[in-house]
Figure (cartoon, protein in one colour):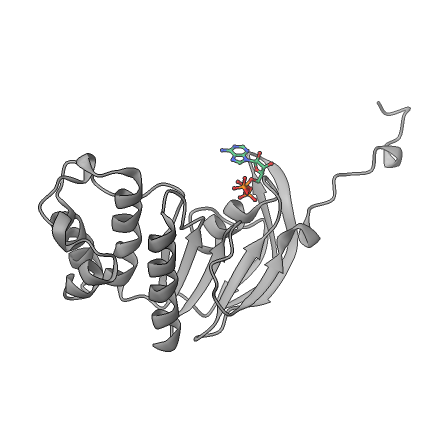
Length: 202
Ligand SMILES: Nc1ncnc2c1ncn2[C@@H]1O[C@H](COP(=O)(O)OP(=O)(O)OP(=O)(O)O)[C@@H](O)[C@H]1O
């Protein structure tokens, strides 16, 4: 996937400009940067939830799976029904590997609304495995996870990379993954310099 000259805005205000990088199969790229600098906005744009102001995203059409801050699960469906629902949407086959990878077998028949925050997160992340998609775009994926689950999740990402997948991950913690990091604050959009305004005009 190639990101070239991407400029993005949130709430009408420019956030990042001229972001360029490549995400290659088998690699993870970790996005860093202080709160509010634009990581979520960048991921939303790459996932196709909002249009960029400028620039292009190429090479990953129909091959992106996005896990946002929210778990994206249906609370009245059971764990098994949630995963089956997504597996059918993506026509990606069995939910079994996802159940094992995220230790969800014991919770199979539990309504998602009756899960703890960390269990909900595990279910939300398990959806990635039933999409069959190569490019995982992950926004703070480990929120609510305990140490063991963070480790488990890092293992799932590593296996995905070994299978030719790729992951773009915004996170403030160290997942212990091998991969490059990109600090997006270097792309911070510059606000117009007030001294450039013509006072007579104001
Ligand atoms: N719904 C919204 N409407 C308007 N502005 C928003 C909205 N959500 C975020 N912003 C603003 O857009 C900018 C970028 O926010 P964004 O969520 O992309 O940052 P972030 O790097 O992901 O932050 P964090 O590390 O806190 O998750 C911030 O200035 C934020 O206040």
